[in-house]
Image 1: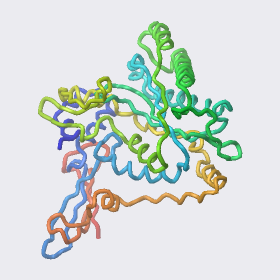
Image 2: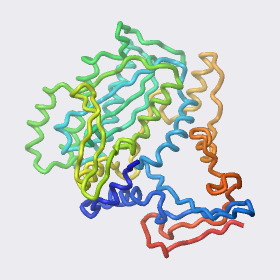
Image 3: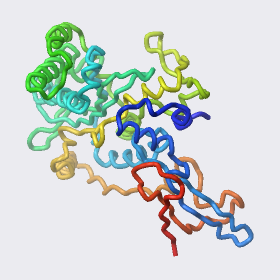
Image 4: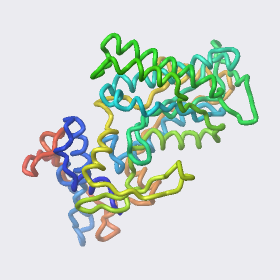
Length: 391
C-alpha cells in the first residue's frame, strides 16, 4: 500500500516557501522512522530475547497515519457531551472567487468563516419563528476538495432543537416533509451578508491585506449577486452514529493513505470522487511536486483551532450546563471521560496485542530504553540522541 510519506520523500520540499509548512511536511515525511526516535524493547522469553525497535510517530494533526488514535479518543469524549436528540449536518461553503484572498489572510478569514456560520445558526435558533432556544453546535473546518484544490468550508453538526433560559428542551417549530433545519433561502443571504460585511470592514481597517484595494469593490458586488452553497442535510441517526460521523469529519486530513494508488519517482496517482459526474470514483495523476504543492495549501496555521463549539457546547460552563439539561430531561449524568491507553485501543480496534513479541509470538516485550532527538522540533542526524534508560 502506498502512503503520503512516500510521496513526500520523493518530492522537493525546497519549493515550499513557508517555514512552518516545511516543518510539518518534514515531520510527516519522518513519521515512524529513526529520525523521530524510538522505544527499545526486548522479549522477556529467555529462549527468544528478541530486540525490537518501535519508531515514534509524528503525532501531527495533518498526518493520515497518526490521526486514527486522536479520532478514537475524541469520539469517546464527545459521547459524554451530546444529548439524545435529533441532529442535522449543515455545510457552509465559500465561493472559489475568495480563494486568493483567503490564501493571503488565512487566520483572519478562517476565523470569520466560523464567526459568520455560527452567527447565522445562533441568530435563527434564537428567533421564536424557528426555535426560540439555544442549540448545540460543533463546527469543523475543511479546506480541500477531492482533487486537493483549495476549497474552504465548514461542516457543522447542529441539534434539531435547543434549550430555553431554564434549560427546558424546545423542539423546532417549522417542520416539512424534507426535515430541514432552516430553509436555504433564509440561511444563505444571512451568512453571505454577515461574512462580506465583516470582510469589507477588515479590509477598510487594514486587517486583511489586498495587493490592490480597487479590486475589492467589483469582487464584492459579484459575490453579493452570486448564490452561495449553504445547506442542511436531513436528520441524522442516533447519538453514537452522530459522534462517529462527526469524529470522521473532525480528524480528516486533505488526503488519506487509502486514496493513494501509486507513487513513482516522478508522479503520484490517487483516487477521487467526481461529484459533477454522478460521484464516480476516478484516478488523477500529478507530478510529485504539484501534489505536494496542493497538499501544502491545507496545512493549517500554527495552533489554529479547526474544531469549535457554540451554544450548549460553548466552552464557558459547558459541563454545568449539560448536567442541568440532563437533569431537566430526567436522564442520568454523563460519566467522566476516560482516556483509553494506546495498547488497549489497538487491541479493541484491530485485535492486535502490541505487547507480544513479533518474533516468537508468545513472549512479551519489555521496555529497555526511550531514545529521542535532542531537538524534538526538527529532524536531526542520528548521532544527536538523548536516551532515557528504564530500570
